[in-house]
Length: 303
Length: 255
Image (tube, each protein chain N blue to C red):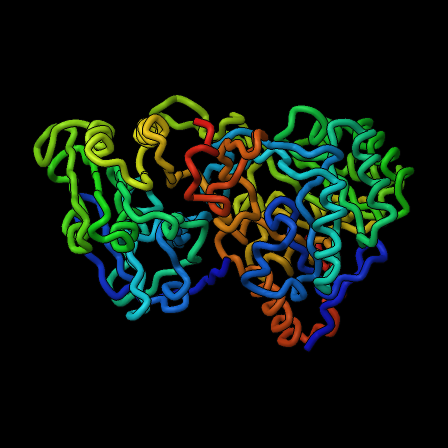
């Protein structure tokens, strides 16, 4: 049995497998299938200052090896989360990362401030949701915007702060450096890639929002590349995500430079994917003489 | 709420009409807890998303469930390739079913591939059930013998009049409600049909429960993609077909 525990920005995770925000709700539904304590961590559904209703349906479309979604941050708001979801999650013996978002940097800061006095383990600031008109990716696609929202949220909380980056940018490395300079303790990447599908019979987009975020195995190579570039450019920890479906993918992502990984879309196909990946990593470590999974982070030897 | 995921044996496979398949699956843990109106989320090998398919029959003694589905696209085509004796990967039973205990007499209205979920309702109400089904034509008609086998009175409609009465199920429903008001109406089918049924039920003052369809992700209520506009206690919100439905009280749904 290898030691699968990892640290991200000083926060302990019992294994590197975190379920990604927006794919796992607040954990209640998957708990019917397995105990949440098997997870390294849970990144909870993106939560905003005020509750949000989200976008009209359809909100999902299948693509080759993936999906597009346009949920639009439907959530009950931070006060509801703190009162009704967080206390329950904290009894589950896994690390809780609160994913937060807002229409304005001030809303993000207000949410972060409210979380500051809770026992949430870490905050993940979403500056990359492609499905909302204000906020979301609007902050995350310029260095100035990313820096400004990181600064105000950093000042609002002492919690370890991870910033979730958008891949829909010219240089994700520059954005990562900008949020690092403003005091982010870690970055997570990638959020979804903006995409579109059209029904050729109706000549209408399948998504009612017209466009949505692409995720699933189809984005994996893009994610590996971006994680590798960012991990080589910043001093803070990187959490890698985007299309991870197997333990081999998870190990690959860690070798690219991730300290931990997140999985999402694969859960819709295999709801036990997190369990399978943790078990697979364990066996892989034993077979390859790896005593501590953390050893493999960033060990890819470039040509 | 109790669901499981696993690979189960497809014990029987039939074709009921063109591109309409009837699968019987041995899955005792799912059959044990399943109720009328719930669905299962089925793996289509090679595709990212599972396909939600409603449960048509539950045999708790044999430990089997029955699903009847139409090949609509590549995913359902892939599922239709699974052979008798092979394994089928399903997650279920999912969602909320039809509330039936408070009522003594019922009318079910099924349009096309919306008919299968009516089967278990007919089983529950037996002779106190009138089952209206509508299809494009005689070749597309399914499940009429099944509905009759439970003692339900069947009223068959086809668009072209090639079998049963000619015309839409909503006309037949009006006639049946006028003849004798049921305690409750259940419906599943195309949205335009459901809307018509809901209007008739409302006018007659009969409670109505409808089973809805939406593009789904996880199937269990975590990913929030299968949103359906609803209103409860005067407040509008997006409910989710997989967890809050697929069966809704028609008064709560905004069309």
